[in-house]
Image 1 (spheres, rainbow, N blue to C red):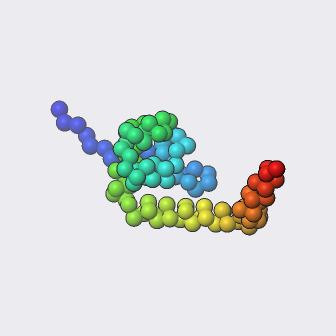
Image 2: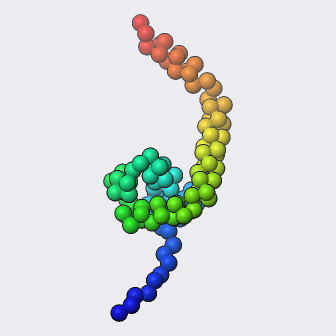
Length: 109
């Protein structure tokens, strides 16, 4: 008996904010790839994010390995957007180091 080969789409979805998430979980692709690039195995990643399934993580890693350039470009864009948001928040809040130092000074007798 022969079986039919079927190509499965990776278990990735784009949420309403434009972030890519794994399966039906809220786990970001960024986190999975970061752990994988940091040396974590698929099993370790599932232990870190128990709302994912082992087969999902293996599939995401395989997709990443086949589409590394596109995913790296996506991750760079995400980091740029995060840096922009950080800068905007810091500009609105002022110098956080100065605020921290004033709070520490208040605690001293």
